[in-house]
Length: 257
Image (cartoon, rainbow, N blue to C red):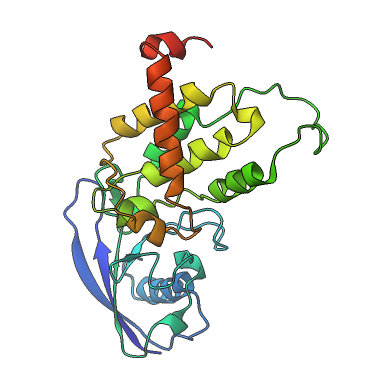
């Protein structure tokens, strides 16, 4: 396959960016999208040019680092697929492919296709944890969990924090990501002690990070490579409203039970 790539190049956070055009030639249809970029970068390095910077780690659809817009779609044209699992057979020989970073105020571009997603980390730090005592692992059957609750928790826990939901949302909202983390722990017995505080703290941090508001447009769910349901947002709203109604202000819950 021979392809034309239109890639966003930006030297740094304060630098002006622009689209640059490159040729990708002799590409196997069985290559992953990131392997194709590796081939292009090898050619650029051989010519003494700066390679295209992009995030990656596991290349197995687990870490969520490979997020990028491909022809205007988060992670590309295949549903429930990360960019690292997208194969070049999804494109046609001679096609022009446009590659851009996530576009959101809360995800500033660091270089080329690499964005700063530390806003997600700060949302997790605000309340995405439980305070269960550590020590030896308890028996798996020690705490009975209804199957429906376990299924809901597992579905929400599939979130890899890639940011596709933010990139695809017309409001650049992080509601699906935040809701997945809140719903995951809130569905389990171990997550009940902090359930109200968790919802208040994580939603407050999400708002501080300059993400847009959720209008339940639904594009986040369509773009999510793990198929996280928009129903988790309803769960987040329910937990947040309950917590808001039962706590007078932030000071009351931030320092204790």
